[in-house]
Each structure stands twice: as structure tokens, then as C-alpha cells.
Length: 164
Image 1 (cartoon, rainbow, N blue to C red):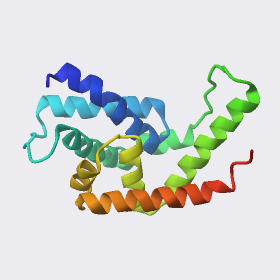
Image 2 (tube, one colour):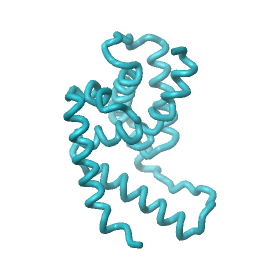
Image 3 (tube, rainbow, N blue to C red):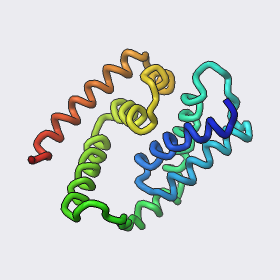
Image 4 (cartoon, one colour):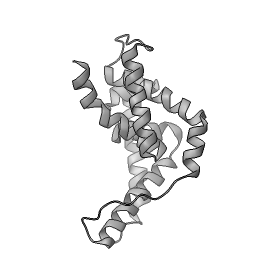
């Protein structure tokens, strides 16, 4: 697979991972570019022991740790400003959709560390359970069961939120 097709396939997944973790569009864009820059420059060598996707997410996790330790992360937390989006639906529908997404993200953030990582890597990184297991140092089956239990917990917690 050439670098252009790899980038086209993986960029949205890596970006989504960072956006969920930082809640900041600019930081997610910067971090995504840093992952691909680091992969291309060869600072981290691909050993072939895992898939390229798993390797890129390992780089992403390390970049995220560096970001969390940086002053830029702290500054971005302080300057959170709501960003407006053009409305296609009614204001009420738009508000409900935003609240639903916010509620889900809030519930995911409250999960324990391992289930949270599994859910984020599965939902936003679109990694297979095998790749998640390899990345987190757990078996494919443990990743699958952890995701299933976290999903059930999230569904149960969100049940009372939705009123039809």
C-alpha cells in the first residue's frame, strides 16, 4: 500500500481518535499530521509485528501522551469556545443531536481506562478487536468482551436520557 492511499484511509480514523480525546479540532488536526510525519520520517520503525493501522495508532497514543503533558493542552482547555455550525435541521433537532453526542461522549469519558480506550479505538479508530488487543496488550477476546460490556453499560446509562 502506498503512502497516499494509506493516508486517505487512516487520516479520518486518526483524526477522530484525537478529536474525541482532545475535543479540539485544531489540536486533532495538528496531532494527526504529527503521527504521519513521524511515521514517514522513520523516527519509529515499522517492525511488521502488527498491522500498519495498529502501528499508526501506537504512534498516535504516544503523541497524545506528549500532548497531554504539554502546556498547549492546558491552554486549549482554558480557551474552549463553542463553535457554531450551519443548521440543516430545525434548531430543536440540532440541539437534541448535539446533546445526544455530548451525553455519549460524557458517558464514554466516565468509563474506566481500559474500556474507554477499547470503545474509542473501536468506534472512532475503527480498529478490529485483534488490532485493539495488540495495541493495548490484551487478547482479541478480552477486547471484544470489554467492548461489549462497555456498550451495554453505555446503553443502559443512556436509556433514561432519550424520551420519545
